[in-house]
Length: 264
Image (tube, rainbow, N blue to C red; front, top):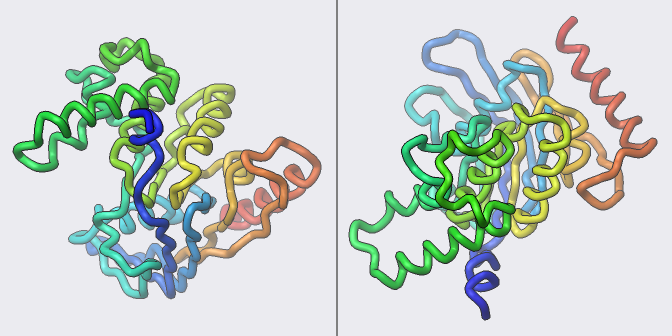
């Protein structure tokens, strides 16, 4: 098997997540953010979660990514199948690309390797460099490996961030509006690219954009209310990423009507 195929094939087992009666409140606030939250996140599929700004979408994702352990009260269950320690199974991709400005594109892709074993073998280091180069080629940045972040466009920077996410090769990918700051065409292209490269992963995408959610969702939830709960919506049976059609437009109008209720 070639280096490209061997390193990009994805060796992790598929993992699904069930959130049962989730409740979340920040220690420094009396307001409950989430309550009676029930969400099924199937393995090797895209689960998209919509909701108004401030409804708790990002708080949910950060909790799942183990970024809020000392800041919130949580009640309810988070179950994985097969049972596993989710801390070792999750990669989190934020809204900002979070590239280190003093590192090249290649070095940014390999950032996670700096926090592994203190003494990696020369063979493993060589393999990881090969994998990082292969991923940059996959995201269309083969000739930009030595560029610094300030030399890259916003879309290129997000492709570097996507390659960095892929290098970690975890079965669960949590994405917090990673394409929201991009222009429409770049966003459309990155949606397609991410869907192609993450097909064997369990993906949770937080977004405030109904079009993005409908294009990519195998499973779609809308978060509403104060505190927020989640309601599942039926998505079209067409193949993802979906093209814009009448069924797509009808669902988008339904979502807009639901979201508008939270602003009344």
